[in-house]
Image (tube, rainbow, N blue to C red):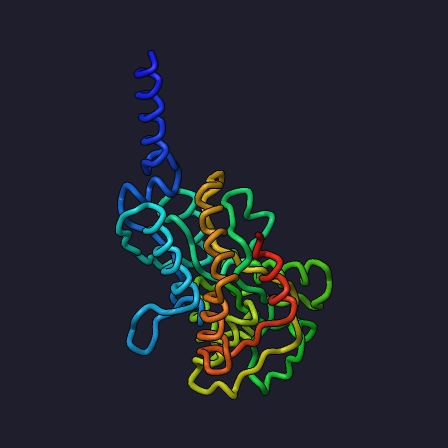
Length: 288
């Protein structure tokens, strides 16, 4: 009898150590030996193609740290594969399990929680508008009767629609939808639209990469407050907690700030000093 009990306990112990015991996303990654990550290709500096036509960006560096942590947890080599997503595809591709995570520039909203889950906040910004300096547009109130570009399904598109509905832009602005920020920026350059609307940090990136950056400016302050987080599957707390634990570790050991400085510091691709609010939020998220 005692031998039988010991045998059963040994089997249970070995099962708990095996990848199958984790279930969900961790199990999927262990089985295939591959970490499927959705990234942007025109959200500078979160995810984009550099001058050598190589993928680069803040969120790709974060994803690589997750891959290293996965190798340690799963006890085996893990390959990372990046797949391009846009605002229209990023949530469905996680929900249908094509991707394990989207490391991009997605705003964490209550409405999106109905379909997917989110990690801890990894960046803080908000909706703004980019215009040509000679446009005469100084804030969203000057968008009356103008054509404003926005990414389909983004919180920025909703922000302009809400301003129209609330009667804060009279006559209403016409919203022109684009799949990628680069398309919207090109439309602004050609005069197809009068302003392009997305998060301030992304607009700063688009402006920095424009042929003539000094021809453009951010008009007005923040229209909304947008916390960025990475998209993970709904009802998979094991994987979400794993990613969150790694984010916390990166905040505590300084890796997060190193990557922030690399991409957003004075010598970064898009200089964007961390606000006091963002710094406080990061500290508060770094649970014991």
